[in-house]
Amino acid sequence: MLTRIPLLLTQWLAALPLSWLRAIGWFMGLVLYAGVASRRHVVDTNLRLCFPAWSAAERRKQTVMCFVYFAQAWLDRGWLWYASPKVTRQRVKLVGSIHELDGNAPTLIFTPHFVGMDAGWLALTQQVNRKFMTIYARQTNAVVDAWILKGRQRFGAGRPFDRTLGFKPVLAGLRAGEPLCLLPDMNYEPNESLFVPFYGVSAATIPSLPRVAKLGRAKVIVMVARITAQGYEVEISPAWPNYPTDDVVADTALMNARLQTYIDQAPAQYYWVHKRFKDRPAGQVSPY
Image (spheres, rainbow, N blue to C red):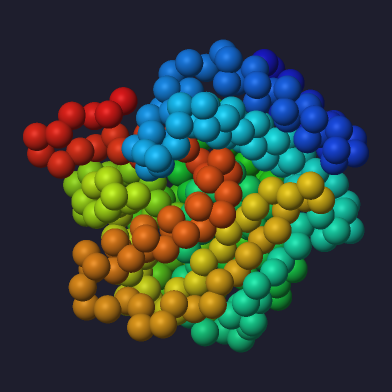
């Protein structure tokens, strides 16, 4: 019951004007920044490693904004998943190389962990006439897990696959023309990862983007969802030329390098609350 109350509250708040929701998100973000010291330390550490030229004051400002955007994106799930389809179309704008989503060519969509990624998924499943797939990790709380899955399947054109169930059905769907949203930019399984640079720091990175692209004979595009005053802007990139190659290490490093260019446009909207540098090469200690 204690879990259901905040979820229902998020749903009820969806009826408020967006400006009110964003103001509430500001307040919640400040509360999180002040009250969750462990995650504040994680964000500060990540930003210190990735943006060493920033002053302490600038890093503090960006850390605060990380929590504000995180809270705003969480509240936005209410209207993303429960407001009328007309409202979501008005607030979520799909821009960029949208033509890359035409047809039925195997397409791999690199979807970095920006806080607005649920808006990106909604834009695809509501506004593009194709079926889409993604891979997700189950939430530890069953009520929250069910709430998120229901929201992400709102428009019926999306198939979330539990990552523990294997990759064969996902690969079959990709080859059959269902675009796959892949999110390999977190520190996941160290045994499956390569250490490649991320903002000049060695980071454990799963090489799934080039490997799946090669196995699925798929082109690679990027989808980045950014919070705006009006809602969200969901940008689709042109397909990456000559990707992947036969060098999986170079391809994985290139993925991180290109991700940096997107983060640099809105640094505080990236999911810095994650311990991106948790696993270290032999002999190095955790920066956290």
